Image (cartoon, rainbow, N blue to C red; front, top):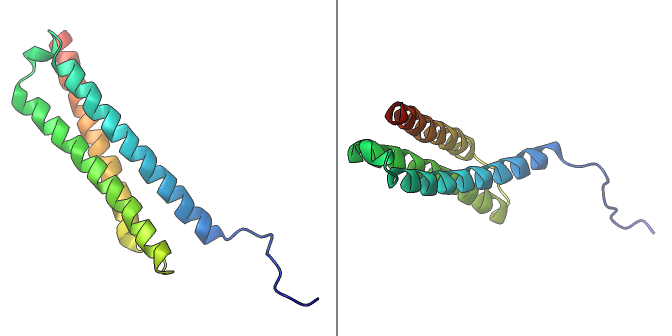
Length: 117
């Protein structure tokens, strides 16, 4: 019985790709929750003191974050479908998603706190 045997050792490169895929899904969820939160808070009495342009800019940042996270997931799926290594673009999209998420949520929180005080 000298047939092919299954390896018990996990592939570290595959682990990185799986983690990146899960991370990008997480970032997409956070971007969507952030958009919903900003829209909800902007409709409150304190939120109406914030200029609409500022709210729109923060929403665009979160939308870009979600788009980058979705792009990262799509790049991983395309690479896996074609049996190719995941390109550098997926990693860059993930970093951009985190940057836009931090800018959108952080920027809105600063403006929100100033409006409350």
